[in-house]
Length: 257
Image 1 (cartoon, rainbow, N blue to C red):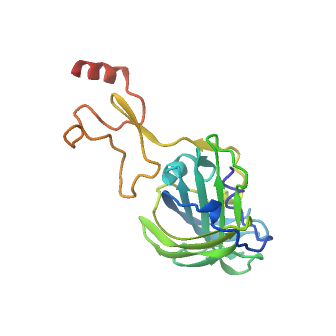
Image 2: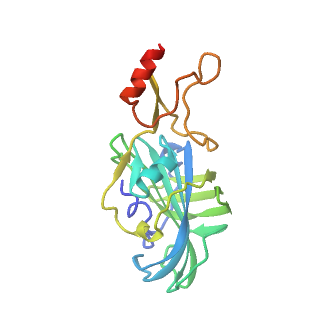
Image 3: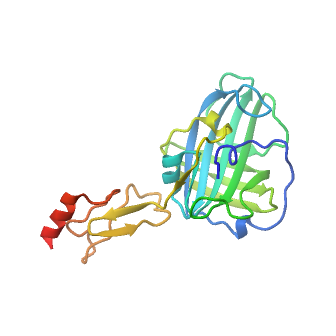
């Protein structure tokens, strides 16, 4: 699934909404993240010409760690075997040279190209298999509705979505997600991705044993950790690792047995 053109491409020519039930039969995210998009003047936005634009990018996912995927692939990748909902709340000035950062407000879907100062939203959702190929009926693209941004801080973004898709389905839900510390060029969201990354489920390797992490670690978790020892504490000799133990680690562990 190409997350640039296929997900954050402003489709201003299509219109309509449907009542075909909840998105993908009832999409329930287990992970979420937001990226604050710094303002820039973009000349590659369809139908608009040079436009000063800023925005907030929100990813909601089931079966993948949203911030991990954003960190590894930015907008050009997806989590293996996951369902992903990507949304952009965009604030701009057509023909302008500067625009304030996007903040609280209502960002509607636009059926026609804007002029002057505008707020707009664009959304797409997809289900992919273990090699990140879209399953039948996916992706779905926004055709009506809006995104409301309620609060924006350095650490969290909250709001609500009432989004209708071109497959007749809808997604209505509030969100409160942490800010993911990754930099994405807002203008790149309107270009096609040259390549696509399929990010495997995040896991850690503890000394002696391998433990997959949950699909969505709590937002308060600052780093993964290994299972507790027999007495409810981390066992001596265990530590969280993101790569396989080195020969020296294995030798040292063998001596402790």
